[in-house]
Amino acid sequence: MQEDAAGAGLHVAFAGSLGDLPAAEGRSLGDVVMLDCPVIDAATLAALARLDLRAAGGDTRLIVSTSVEMLDEVFACMDMSMPVLLVDPNRAERVIALGQVMAGFPAARLRELSEDDRLMLLRLSEQVGQIAGHMDRLAPAGSVRAGRSGASAEAPDFAGNGPPYAAKDPSFLSDARMLRRIIRQRQLRARFIEGDLFADPAWDMLLDLAAARAEGKQVSVTSLCIASAVPPTTALRWIGQLVEAGLFQRVCDENDRRRAFIELTDQAVDRLARYFGEIALTQPVPV
Image 1 (cartoon, helix red, strand yellow):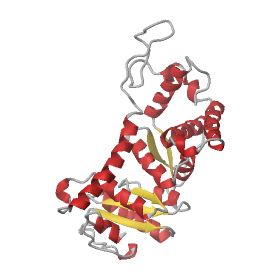
Image 2 (cartoon, one colour; image 1 turned 180 degrees about the vertical axis):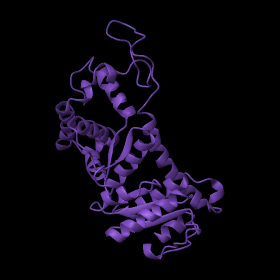
Image 3 (tube, helix red, strand yellow; image 1 turned 135 degrees about the vertical axis):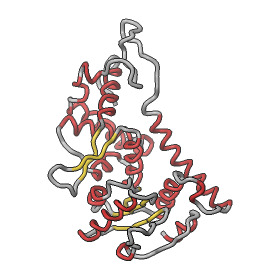
Image 4 (cartoon, rainbow, N blue to C red; image 1 turned 90 degrees about the vertical axis):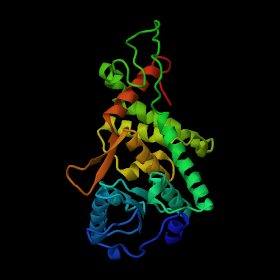
């Protein structure tokens, strides 16, 4: 990790264990803190929570790698600083995370980069930009769609104009069997055609959360990563983008503050209801 940080153009001020991290409240943590916590006990969780609070109060960005088994615990205890979470990452995934964080830094916060450093950051920033671009296309500002009987001023569009379908007919998002059938149909393709050709983690997670909402269930971040059908670190990047897009939100367990879940926002519910309302005019079962 130290080599990767230095190669990305960052000056490494400290390398050591979490317990040895400078603890003075008045002392800056620097621009980035990278942590590797594959196995976590109660003391480590408490230390992570304190670090999360310190980072949120300053300008420090956290990159935390852990294991699948510990993901829910880490996710629950770090809710203030919006850390970049990685699951069993390889070196490339750590470097991509550094690029994602550095892309958000003002230029003045970084040292003078070499030409190789600048090219690497450009490539990493481009990948992050592509993810953001995919999210932008989830909510196109389209024109009002004509109904069966012709153009109608009352017909809503995906950008939010007109009366919402959710208000007219909430059944589009209350039929859990239909939503689970759509999910199974999407998964069935992988039995016959290479699944990577159809990877669409954002849509798979939206469908899974919609089905869970209809069933009255809560979804952990680990379960959502599984539903995405992509590696956990990739799924976590998408979850972060969907949170920033206002489609996903983090909610704490009312009975156990050490647990947290992901659910659809009201905005996402309304948009999905609009979507199902639109396609119901032309086909009975959307996939």
